[in-house]
Image (cartoon, rainbow, N blue to C red; front, side, top):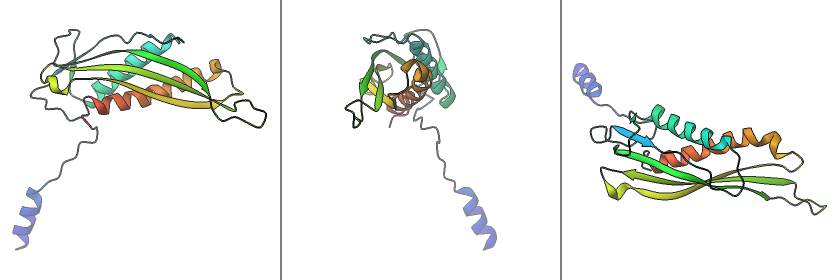
Length: 163
């Protein structure tokens, strides 16, 4: 009985994907990316390269897709950075904002060349607040890193993560 129970328990297994990618690698083998030009009214030049690198790194580290330089890949991600805005938040007793919000918006066109029904065109945005007593130039790099991490998570989950 003990041997039978152990053999049955040993043959059952549960598997989880911790990276969230829900791709059939028999169908999807390649992905390509285009540049994400900044089309926002305010421009922070390092943002484009930072965003593109983080998005490509996330996809290559969390999937088995091979990045290629052709638009005829199985999957394609393209778009533009459409927003880079500052807005006052919590107003203090003196009628001045005590917090400022930096919001970044990105329009993403996800093209599934194997199944058009899975293609999508969507805008994602994320933000971080910082004390108004600080200059944007002093916190900009750190805020852009944090916001870009949030954006790439959202984009990954909505596209190749298939959530």
